[in-house]
Length: 209
Image (tube, rainbow, N blue to C red; front, side, top):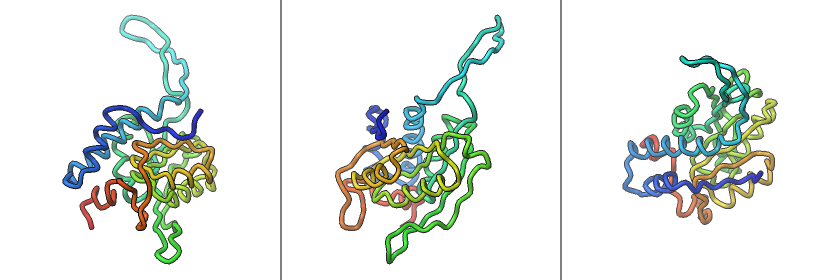
């Protein structure tokens, strides 16, 4: 199974196109991020194992398929990752939610952990780390390292826009983590912004500058 999955679904591509536009308002941007996350979740959960369960319909007993084991956990990287959570919960309402907080040291540019709160049974779940942007890959790689240090093995990463530099870093540091990407962009600019990108996802989601 390939590690990198770039979404090709027309609805995802259309919504990303609207998301990129500078005139898209914060309200519409938030809604689009949630919708794209929901569609990406649908695509990214194709691998989930199923088990047979006997039930009773109004007509008779029968055997149906259900997702095996405990449901997913969604772990957004604060703060922009919060914008994707509701979209995933729309598809998998039984998922639990953790949070990871990282900030970039202004001198070293390295990610520093300031918050981590995870479901108690997180290690028994398929964990989806979410962040709209995969730029340098530093925050995503650090967040996944934090999860692994806490005994979590089944980790997947979802982002809406990715730069090749971030993908390279994440695949090198975590070759066992599947990466689901809405759109793979051209490069990072000198300020470490994705080109063409969509600007600062956190600012656009929350209406801050």
